Structures are given as structure tokens and as C-alpha cells.
View: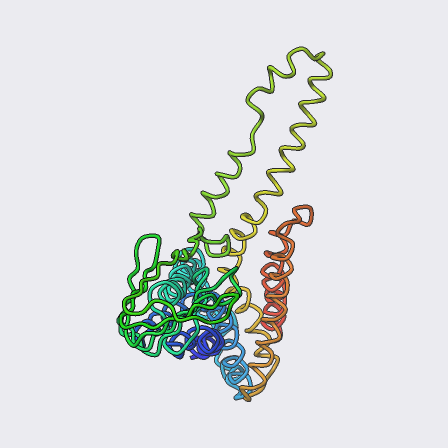
Length: 376
């Protein structure tokens, strides 16, 4: 239940900001919106699974302690380790699920989610002139249509620009057709009337059939960003970067006339420069790889901390559990954000900073759990 609540909360922001705007603007149907929301769910699970596990642990053991169930278990001779073993095993199972989601499912869903927006924007700006709007996506022209039925237009107005700013001609027609080619888009209208606007003022222009062709604005399709790559893609990217930064092929020929000591000194200096260049180039990729793996162990660390904190909290109220869970999540992800911000500074070893909250939570959780077991 807590995972479902966390997923819903994290989805709301993206849905209200991005997804619903597609439907409101007429860029996507209801089915496309549902598909976009479905692709967002694995992406938010990266954060929702650890948050849900932590919140559930705090709420469960807080209520368990407040209702004196721990006292009853102690009287029955059941140890704390026996009680928490199933929960710890569940957290380890969720670590495996998180690893699959973080390293493979979520990045692919994120890329597919972004493609929905790319396709919607491409369809809006290149293929379908939206109704009731002034479209300025075509160099040298501004278009306005009252109705657009899959390329069949009604109430067409076209402004031809001079120097991309001044209006040189205005064409109006009751009907028209929009045809999209490989490199150009063609607007043909019937029963048109036009007005030429020049230095001498406005003059009547051509009437009847008018055809206008404008270059098609192409969206640049780029490769996925590092943050949107799967673990295997990151590994391939890392190997590719390391192969690119190699010793010059003609290094021996360039240094063969140098004395041995100077060649050795030049070789050491070049090796240092190459190592530094490799480190600077590959650090962002390494940070992304370590981030995916480190996130996978968040459920385990949160569980180890949540069990003794829930016992010590000794409260039935769910709002207290949510508040403590939120505070712990902020502490955890603050270190992750610091590591991400330093991904271009290899001297600060940002990949170790990303692992630090895992080590911290697990160490603190083990100590608190050991103390709780002794006091139990």
C-alpha cells in the first residue's frame, strides 16, 4: 500500500505537468496519455520502492510496539531476530526487483516516454496545423486555420514574411490541403484571395488556386542521455570512451630521436595525461552506473534503519511514520544529489559519495538493531 501511495504521489507531478498537457492541447489521444502514464510507473518505482519499504517498516513496527505485541513476543520466548527475519528477507527480494527496474526497465521506459512527446511535438509542428493557432514553425511563413481534419483545412489564412519579420503577402481561402513530403510541406488552397504588401502599400494579388511550399522543420533525434541509459548501454559507452583515449599511433616515431631518459619522462607525462583524460571523460558514466546499483540496495538499508526506529518510535499515528520516512529519504537522496553534481569532478570520487548513504544507513541500522535486540 505504501508503494502504491508513493507511486501515486510521484506520478502526480509528472502527469499534471507533462502528460495531461498533451491531451489538453489536442496532441495526443486518451490512449496515448494512458500509455505515457504506464511508462512513467517503472521510472518512479526507482524511488517509490525504497520509500514504500521504509514507510511500511516504520508504520508496522511502530504500531507493533505501541500495541505491546513485542512484549507478548518476548513473553513467548520469540527473539527480535526471528521476528524481523522475514522483513529483512523481503527487503533483499525488493533489492533484486529494484536492480531489474533501475538497471533495465526504468531507463527503457523513460526513453519510450520521451519518444511519445517527441512524436507528439513532431506531429503538431510538422504534420497537423493546430486549429485556432498561429503556427510559426515554418521559416518565412505564419499559418492559421480554423479547422483541420487530418490535413483537410477550412478557414485558411497564410502570412508570407519578408526578412522573417515583415508581412509581404496575406492569403485567405475557405478550404485547403496540407501535404507533407520528405523535406518540404506544401499548403494548397482553392478560391483564395491575396493581398500583396509592399513599399507602395497593399495591392490585390493572385486569386483562385494558390500553392505554397515551405521547408519541413526536422526534429533532431538524439541518442539517450547518460541518465536514460540501461546498465549494459552504460557499460558499452564506458568501453567506447576508454578505447578512444589511447596512446598516439605515431608516438614511437615521434620520440625515436629523443634520448632514452627524455623518452621515459615524456612517456610518464603522457601516461598521466591520458589517465586524467580517461578519468574525466568516464566519470559521468561511472557515476550513473554506480547510481543504478546503489539505488538497488536502498530497500535493505532503509529496512535496517526502519525496524529499530519504528520500535523506538512506539507510536500508532501514521503521520509520524510518514514524517520520519520523509526525513530519512531526504537525507539519503541528498548524498546522491551531491554525487550527481560532482560527476565532472573525479578528484572528489563522486561514485563513492553515492554509495555513502547505503553504508551509513546499513551501519546505523545494524547498531540500532543490535541494541534493540539486547533491550528486547
